[in-house]
Length: 308
Ligand code: NVA
Image (cartoon, rainbow, N blue to C red; front, side, top):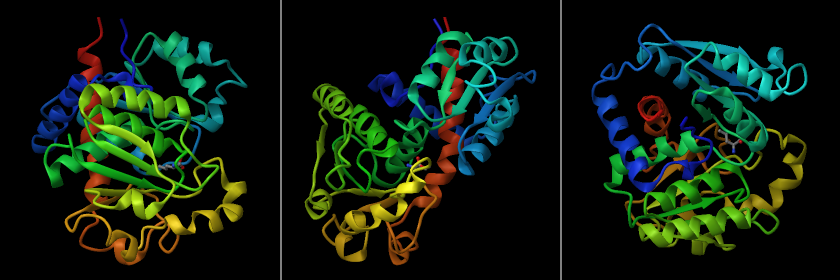
């Protein structure tokens, strides 16, 4: 069976812990895993903008002994010039894994159904699971085991980051509160899956309208842009309803004194987060960015080792 990583709950709690333990080992010993020695190629495809994801996957695949084959999404025109299944069949003959940032989750699922090699979600409209592996690694570095900690995500609670926090956070046994304005609640199916996962891990999942209530006594406060890629035409109308969800020093005062602040970046200072917060002592955003490298290397290594 080919294992894929299309959404956060594709890894069980035990499997997620294995990947995070490997990420920690690879951070300490950068060249300890060489699953793509050869070098074998791994396709890395972007249908949306990128900085960290391209840098971390290409550097990471090279450090794993492989060749990062950047496929330009604008040239490949997957789904228009060539169908997703045909693209998957071609790439599957040439590469050891496919990493894809795209729009709908259905596109990624179709790729996985036909590629015959592991497919990794490098962000879709619905989920951003690689970011969450890095985020959990960062949380454990700064706060110890994630299980039992409370995380508050503020902003677009209907976004990929909110959904991934719900699924991956509960998988890790965390209490996950996502908070955003009316009209931007998480997908009820994702919230319900997160609650089911939480029932088995001792965590919890909730959507909280009031941002102050969400951050009260939180150990980790997270935000993200209010305008995800693909939503640019809604940028103006989102400013007013989202304003009270901005991570300011005043709002942060309701969290635990030793709470850490996270942001997957890119950040818009003065909008979803104040400069004094993201550039202040509680911010761990640069560790978080670096951990994309280690966490994704661990994931690719784990997936390669778990093909049957
Ligand atoms: N929610 C953001 C994450 C960027 C890494 C987006 O989808 O644009």
